Amino acid sequence: MRHLLKTATATTGLALLLAFPATAQAQDQTAEVEAAAAEGGDYISLGTGVITVPSYEGSDENIIIPELVARGSVSGFNFFSRGPALYVDVIRDNVSGPGLDVGFGPVAGIRLDRTTMIKDPQVEALGELDTAIELGGWLGVTQTGVITSDYDILSARIDARWDVNGAHESYIITPTIEYGTPLSTQTFVGASVLAEYVGGDFGDYYFNIDSAGALASGLSPYGEAGDGFKRAGVNLLAAHALTGDLTQGLSAVAVVGYYRMLGDFKRSPIVSEAGSADQFIAGLGLTYTF
Image (cartoon, rainbow, N blue to C red):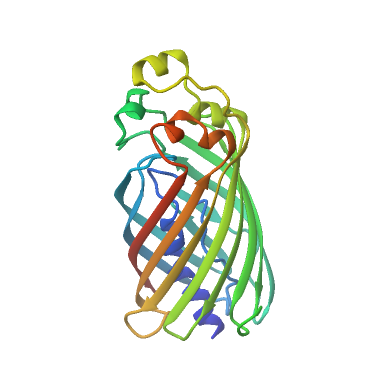
C-alpha cells in the first residue's frame, strides 16, 4: 500500500501541475501533493493533458493550453516537474512506513506570463514581456499517516526562485500546504492551498503601467505594485486508475482551482480595469506510470 501511495501521488501530480500552466505561470508553484517514496523502488510517471487558465495573471479571459509533466524516483532520489519547472529532491528517501519525510533541493523553471496568447487588446497593447528563467531551491516536510489511514499525507513546503534572464530580475516565494488520501487502490483525492510573495521588481515588471504604456493601451497609469503577497489560491484534484490500480498503468486526473489576486496587484489596471481579481482554472489529463 505504501507503494500505491507513492505512485498515486505521482499520478495526481499531473492534476496539481496543471494548476501552474506554462503560459499563465499561475506556480507551479501548485501545488501537488508530496509523498515519501515508500519502498525505495524506481519509477517514472509521465502525463499530458489540457487546462483552461487565464490568458495572463489577472485576466478575466481564459485560454486552453496543453501540459506535459514528469515525475519519478531513481535510487531513492525524487524529481518532479511543476508547470515549466523541474524540482529535484537531494535527500534520499528511506521511509518505509508512516512517518515524517524531509525534502530539499534545487528548482529551475521559466516564466512565460504575458509573453504570448494575450487575449485582452489593452493589455496586449502594453507589449509582450520577456521570458524569465528562474533558479532557486525548495524545502518541505511530509507526514504520512495523518487522519484517514496510514497512507494519507499532509505536507508543507516553501520554494523560492530568482530570475537570472533579465526579465523581472526579482524573486517569488511560494508557501504551500497540501493534503491527499487514497480512497481505494484505484482512486486518490487531494487539495492544496498556497500563496505567492514577490519582490518589488516583479510587481513593477508585471503590474505597473508607465505613462507610455497608459497612452498606448488606454489603461490608467499605475505605479503602486511592489513587493508583497500577490495572490492566494486553492486546488482540488482527483485521480482514478483506468487500468489496474494507481501503482502502474494509465490513470485519468482532473483538477479545479480558484485564485484571488491580492493588495496592490489586484488594484493594477491590468486586473481592475482589463481583468478580474478572481482567477479560475480547470484541467483534465492522463498519466502513465511504469
